[in-house]
Length: 408
Ligand SMILES: *Cc1c(COP(=O)(O)O)cnc(C)c1O
Image 1 (cartoon, rainbow, N blue to C red):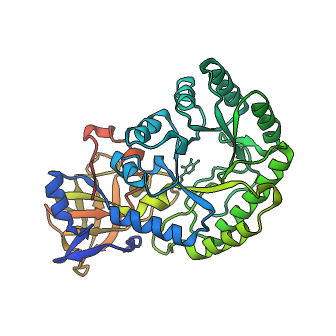
Image 2 (tube, helix red, strand yellow):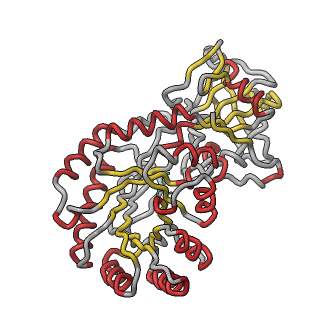
Image 3 (tube, rainbow, N blue to C red):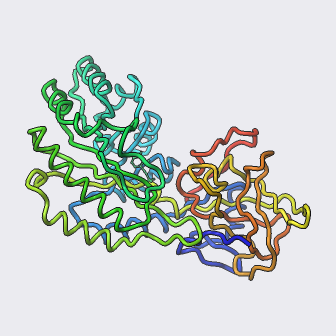
């Protein structure tokens, strides 16, 4: 038997069935008219933002990293809840604009921004988090051509990274950001050549559950930002401190101690280095904001036995939930939190493998998991599906097409 990951807080049962946002899973499936289905819960999103606001010092703003879940209704729901939006493509810019977000609230990071993307962002008044000298110079040239001073922040590739980070995005050679020792020269040049200086962006990692690692990284970020500001010789309008808060996916994972992170940050913010005295601060979060708010619902199509092992074959798969299958940045495959939604409160009675419908052995949701008895037609729930699900999975693979998504 292999355990499944911890089911996030806030999911209840109605008549023994999993409930999301006050309705039974089967009602959402009926409303959508089909499975597979991603259900994103407004109540979860609201609760998570409220927890963050309560824990973080007021001085520190909260940005939503759109790539975690760019579903239009989710972005729209987040619009009044967070301070800023971090995008990573002109496509994401289009989504934010479509739901009426003021481009002044948007910053654009990511390596390999095309000229047309830079132009769209500069024309709209989005802040560019500049990833290289070359990109900075292209932005200046495009700004000149448009007659608009581009708003530019420099993304720093720091020499440190967040310990225990699920995905390493800082420290050593990276395709992200400008090596810290070259930032002052670039920033001075951008300012001298007419950019509107928007500050620094220092992202040190992702999917970290350790409060101590987050606190240490935030301390390092503030120290580095102050050093760079002194070296640049211009006041720092804004510092995007990165994020990195993770969510528990696997057995043994425990949630981030958010009050501890918030208290340490409050202490630091109360004693900022002089260089940052007037700097606007923010953190940027994707997964932590939306991950636990999503549930992937998929129907059992077949129940079969092979060499004594029971397989529940669903109509979903890694084409929608690559991460849950263990093929998106994990080394050892472990079971995501999952359950039989139709019999959510029933005791486990059997050991099963829950798999997807793709013709590849990679397509599995739960190995050797203890579940209540389920039959063809019952619905399986895979939790922690709100981030890096629908759009971070190869939905064209094998031709089944995308899942339906709904915000409830
Ligand atoms: C992906 C990304 C994020 C969001 O990361 P999460 O782990 O989802 O919080 C934030 N900032 C940048 C620059 C990113 O690339």
